[in-house]
Amino acid sequence: MSRFRRLAAGTAAAAVVGGGGAYAMYRQRLKHNKAVSAEDFNSSQKERLAPALARVAKKQPQSLEMTFRYTTCPYCGKVKAFLDYYRIPHETIEVEPMFKSQLAPSEYKKLPQLRFGGADGAWLVDSDGIVDTLAPLLGIERQLKDPEVQRWRGWARESLVRHVTLNINRTLLSAWEGYRYIDAFDTIPLANKIFLKVVGAPIMYMVAAKKTYPTLVKAGELKDGDDWRTVFHQQVNQFTEEAVGQKQFHGGKQPDLADLDVYGVLQSIRGHDVYQDMLQSTRIGPWMARMDRALGAE
Ligand SMILES: N[C@@H](CCC(=O)N[C@@H](CS)C(=O)NCC(=O)O)C(=O)O
Image (cartoon, rainbow, N blue to C red; front, side):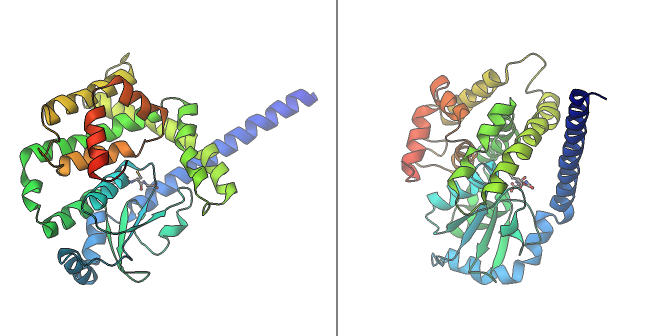
């Protein structure tokens, strides 16, 4: 075999082993993520959570409340928007997405997670689990049952999250850029950052094409040949016109849970070209600026 052929064969073998390794890791991860459901996990914490929730209700949260998140996770964005708007003091722990070592003490492996009161504290997980548990303590239980709030919260969770994922991971380069945020975190070792981009970006690209896209097609929100970016912009305009319209917010003069969920999902891509393009190409800008002001994010 010529040197060139040996090199080509070696490279192809490495690609197959590397690709197979990444796929095996991905399967293993899905298994861990499914091992405990959010509902079962939250139930297991019920007794330990009670005193922490009582403190939130009395507006006496400890500054030890911690949110575990990925900056670019749309569900984590929902929780951050909620805690920021209701001024619940909390510290943010950025989880390194490849090995998730910061989550070692928790049996539940998805994000976001909220931990109350230090290292031995009780956990509350799942974005809706967190918001729906804390909302009644803040006197806004009525919103949870409002059909219009439910409609747009459902849209944020089922539809907007997927359009965002699809557009961020439309090309390998765009998926790679989606991981740029990680460079800002000194707590994450350089080797993990490189590994994450080299393995994580292709995985996200594949997930978008093979999982997110068919789901949106099945839901009737996309069809073959549609431009993904155009459809995303149409969806965003529909929210702006139908949910907000002539009001300041969906909630009227103040944001409600629908505003907070939609805003939170979109904050997960702030800084990415797709976010900038959305602000320029849709009519969501004025609402977004009002939300930034309401959450003190300017
Ligand atoms: N229903 C959950 C979904 C959470 C979720 O899927 N989070 C993603 C990050 S955006 C996750 O943790 N994926 C598992 C992983 O990264 O291994 C929620 O609303 O909190």
